[in-house]
Length: 223
Image (cartoon, rainbow, N blue to C red; front, side, top):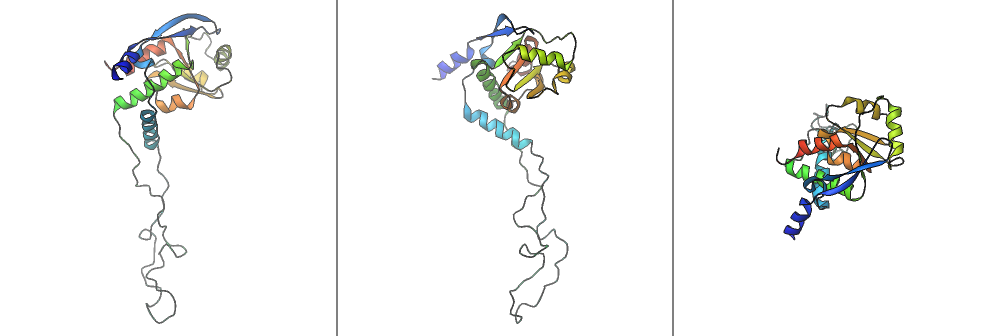
């Protein structure tokens, strides 16, 4: 089984290339080490939950009985009053007292996992996008007039007009970010900032051939 999976991951996979008019112009062989990996749901789930935990702001905070002001004096004597015994008005069962078991901002939700694990999970999601024809590759993202309307027209020409999509721009290309960020159901990310959570939040992935090269150069195991 291991030899079969290794052989499968080493095979290149072919995909279509479109121009800005939505016409198929050529094809591209993608390296199997990134774009043709077998699916492992457990690994992807572990990485996604870990990244979501690391992104938690952890701002909710409640005061316990030791943090609330006052309550140093015993409300009444221990015996003889006929009432229940109490040692402090800051007890959680008193109004204005501390909170028992509430959220604390000193709790650490961070999870550490190897970089290889995070990258492999991302490669698996990319491989699933390719296998399900959810990866749309443009021959170029060099738009003559960098305006949002131009990007909207490009999306309408491609088979992603009604579904959510993630536009991956080449590294250091701010124009794509500026003309894409206001389009509905559209996310944008640079190739070097790509991650599993962003890929799973959108159905389609729109990228150029330059973006493909940037992903391979940034996340290559040889590097």
